[in-house]
Length: 277
Length: 108
Image 1 (tube, chains in turn orange, green):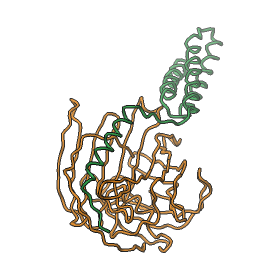
Image 2: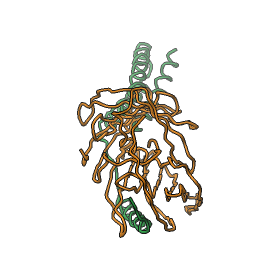
Image 3: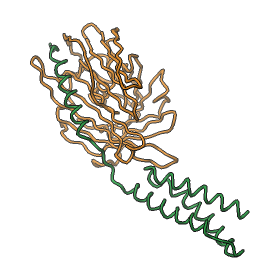
Image 4: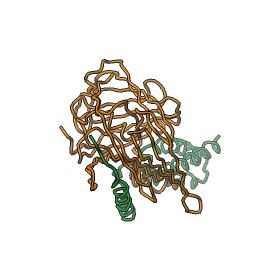
């Protein structure tokens, strides 16, 4: 459905992924077939959302979700860090504290991922995943770290092949924003593959049309997209999970509504700064 | 009947108190209202029968506290706590990540 600019990318990297800690938070969805030129995402962008959950018919604000980008320079390259953080509001911290961080270091020109880290801290549960992508040969080096009850950590290392269109969740979220949605017909759909917990999950996105909605950053004309994951209990259903992206050059996600097995919730934008356009 | 209404009022008041302690916003208001109505009925009947109304007064006191807590929690602004330890851990993590990225070469 979406027009994608092809661009060849060759990357070489390597280093032993060695991890110890990091703090992270959040969530959503996708992957790509070929890499497109990044015309949407700039370094220094920061989007802030409120995550709410429906409790007995009342929407209750649970957490703050931020999506921010930053330029990262190494001695050999300039990368773009895409970071999503989900943190419960302090009033919830005594009951169930969440502090999850998802981040990916990508090529700023085409959003090709090199390193993905996901660190979740949820009410005492801790888990960290790291993927070192070698897109040139479609291989991933994965390290999973978990915490035992006695406070010590254990690692699980894996190397496996992925398909050419597989990406991590953060890259996929940003990649959706980079799609040429204005060229897609209403009702058309596209599939993406996400690598999550060492498994490739297929995701379908369907363009439902345009809608004008009122948000904290103003009244915006938006693309309304339906998202569904196959082989998963979460985000299943045809039109149950919806995402609104502004129908402009920034394609800011301003609202998301989702249904999970234990209820439903939504993400609403609170502020957007550092936009490219 | 009177005993049943009084018992229900007490149980629902306790549920209301529990919900008002949790940061669920105005969700505790519903049991507070129900408990108040039941308590009022029981109170009137007890007064009519010349019985001791202390237990109902205690229920009303619980309801007032619940209502106060509920309103306080609902009006409390949404803030996140970022402690110094978290900031330090993140900083260290970023440094480790930067070391891992050193070998990456981009050819575009």
